[in-house]
Image (tube, one colour):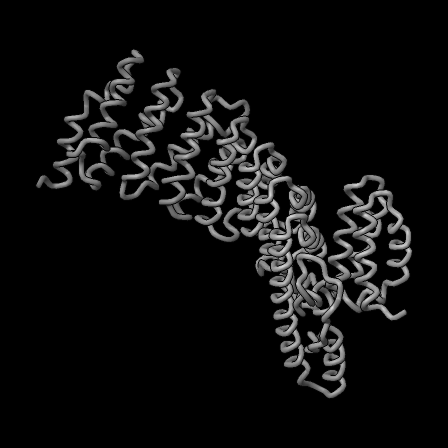
Length: 457
């Protein structure tokens, strides 16, 4: 077997004529050179060893092939993408490809106007980025070309070709995985702003792909302001999406965002009087989850209720942890210990096993909700009710219907805590039971019955 250095020399000698073809002025010659190199380097049974291939391709072929991404002949551009894809899949270390390749990709599909007019070639380039490149390189290799990689993704979110958007979304998820939490801190807000318009795309498969990418971006460390001002308004329509799989997916995503520890307030101890100290964005995201709880598809509603209960369990656990921390901190003067104890007691997770048999629970409720979910809703009830009671009086049937459904779910979870808001609840309920829309009135009546089971006459 030839030594590596000798093998490199021999391979270069055998390829020199084909390499020279890549810079020829004749389009047919360039095309022939690309075709031959693809065959000799990657397709033939006697293709060079991976060690020799790494040396020859990176040092002698890569710049020439990358330059042909901008060739005036579409077939030559296609063949160059094929060679780059094969190299990214088969080189022992594809990371040296990033520095010359990502700027070239940005020039073709990451600027306005987009220079690559073939949607299929745009798609193949995105598959190259989101496939073997992002799968096989590490964060350290990506850092120097993150500007270019993000530019390619951001401009691809606006591509008219729906498959391009889906592939860019998949690549986004892989990018967040490769760079790790916080690795996209400088980019994530702009990426989110660029991607959320596609949540209203006419294809449900695109909406799902965008939601997955958005999930990855939020969990990678999206700024609180971006989540509240950009993400929440954009995601809200998905809880009413006409495709069941989208509504189901958004349920799981919302629950994941709420329980993501990385999103919690930093550098201050938790305040167990405030759910915001123990969960991420509970006042913004919980109402969306509760809307799905009363989904017309009872299977989706059941999954949403399960998600709310799972979030509630996380909340309950964090309350217990905060109580334990407060108890340890109170091991000082007696007066100080009493003050902390009384503060903790106000938000303690009760252990009552009170029976609620026979209550008029409607699907998806099969009985009394779990304790953590009840405590979670109770803790933010004063913030949940005003927008619901406002919407139940709105002029559109859809808004009133959604509000009535959400009101039922909230009251089923709030139980006796609704008594503190009885005045405002009774006024809204008395007005809404006479709604012209029978379905709205019926749902309000159910909510009133639920409230009546817990509020003293």
